[in-house]
Image (cartoon, one colour):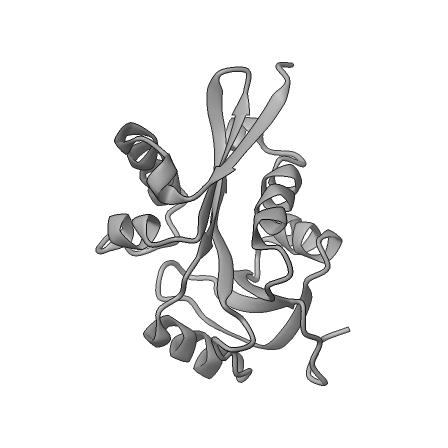
Length: 170
């Protein structure tokens, strides 16, 4: 197997071609709305590209969530996630199915290094226990209730890192 490398930079530091590749990977995951995605990617805090050798096998991002998205997550989970407490959201995590198996951890670890001391939240499908394990290894705690996804048939869960709440799920 080729050596893994992870590159994390601000969106403006990547080429247009790399940004198109990032967006294509995110859309391949089938869990986000395509409309406006390119603009959201360009507005992100940081993007991560995971490569095996020279081939791209995974992506993830530190998003600057809109107030509308924050309100939807807060309403769905029953947990407030104000910008003053949670500036960033980790998401758009996608690893090629043929490359899966422990790859989300190095990808997300590098993103969190870019976040520094900022508190971060993430949402994930309830039916994705591998991502739940990755988030737990990175110090995230599940909070609130599950809620229906607008993209697909699964329920969503909220995880937070940096500020622990009384509503944390054990």
